[in-house]
Image (tube, rainbow, N blue to C red; front, side, top):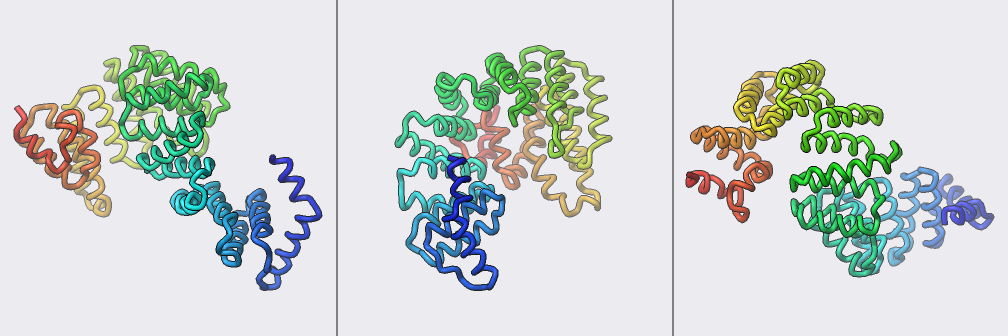
Length: 382
């Protein structure tokens, strides 16, 4: 298909179309051309990485031929390929209004919805694709991922299993399936998947870094400290200029899990010395202590963050800092049995950060309860 397209772009027929378009554009005149000709010009510009020119040609096609469908599809494709997710969803919906059985449009809109954290909508889109093509593996994987991102981990694990039965050597699917299993605390199964994913990747997968990092986590969770540290070390080979991984924090987490507190504190000290965002790093360290069930230390760190946020230099970000930490503060005071402080910070967190409050307390309060009802349940806890 790609070769046919390249051959067409070199053909006399297309070069004549492109010449007429560019000549008119260079003189400031509107090139009155057929819809399919303008779409071909846009497609050519996309193949050359000239996205603005592609959009301009497509917009002209839409203006001259408002009833034509090809320019609508072309605009949706351009916006999707250039990762303009919100806008691509709008145009993909226009494509589907015209042809509700367009499988590629359903796949693209589900991917765009996932990128926009619209997981319920993405699940619906994946289901539509599967209704049209029950064996579409891409849609099945979208369904698994969107289900997992709605915290429906058991259901997602079953869908991932369906996919991996048919596509057992897909290292990206293995990675996402393993990540999902970690929420179910099925760490050995997750680690087995990640081991296979790392072997399949051979350093070529764009997710190899994340595969190694997640394997470090699962190795630690099944009691393999040295294997966890080794996986962490291997991941360093796959960093790029855009990678922001604080290996001191990750190593400190592993050491703390295995009760090597002095080594963990040494790692955390290095992390704080090297960070550009002191408060964020402190917050991460507090979360590590919470994960290791040391709520007293975590409480102390969170209190220190709250006190630091009162300094003049944090005036502009103070509200965001307090919003970020108050659900964790409420949870720590709940775990340490300090009811007055627990209720104080729970009231703050419900008002300022209901989303994270629900994450912290969803296993403590009734699942059907809304965050705004948490204070009622908190006052009635034994």
